[in-house]
Image (tube, rainbow, N blue to C red; front, side, top):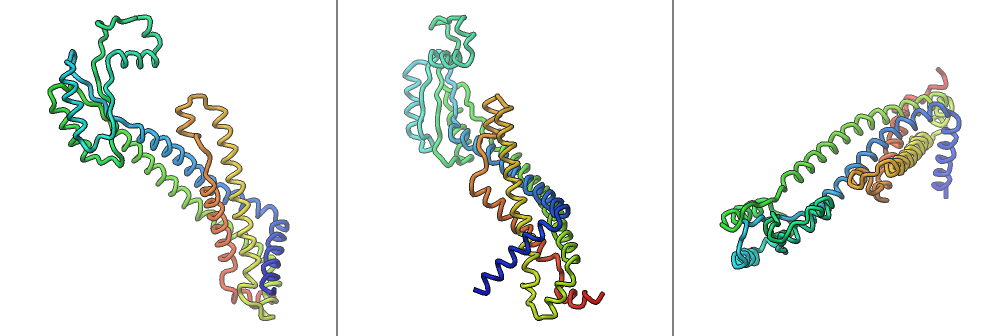
Length: 303
């Protein structure tokens, strides 16, 4: 019961600390919210881009372009070849007519040309889906086998650009973390300094509590709680600002591809919870460090 009373005392004193020093606490809230917003926004952007890249990776396929005027028996040879390959998950032979129909859907202006079947300039091709997980070494070995076939004119499998995008994304994430660490250190210093100023305004109370035999945790408790409250409020503000940005971006961007890349989904509940935890740890750590050594405050009421 005494432990519960102590916790309630910490919470009450922490809330009083917020209301007593509004300007100082507002500045601390701003700095901590800014660092948490940078972390949250970085996670928000990278999460959406990773989701899009994962979708592209799942639908990624290898396209084999066959030589012009290839007879059906030669196509059957390639089909038999593909069936023997364990790396192949599924495949589909695309006729020139089907290829032209697909292109016309993408560019309706081509319909006006109205090719005759005998005039269709497009060759036969085969769309191949590979088994997951994709092993790059096996892929390139398979590509070399395909290119060695006399019936094959060209293979299209630009996997490297997807890997490059993932590499750039990892670098962007690394830079975001660096920025967050810099802002996090600034936030910790700000919270520590501000709560120490608040502690100095109550140095007589602290020294009297120390003289009466109060434990260090009983003295630090209200200041740690004040830091936790600052961190908690900052994380809530950061999430609300991120939600506002998410709504604005979805209203402003009309291109569906760019919209999916930048603002497909909001942060998951786990990410939001993690952001709150980071804010609480930042604020609580600042509150804990603010008083330094409790013994320094022993005779401060005589100064």
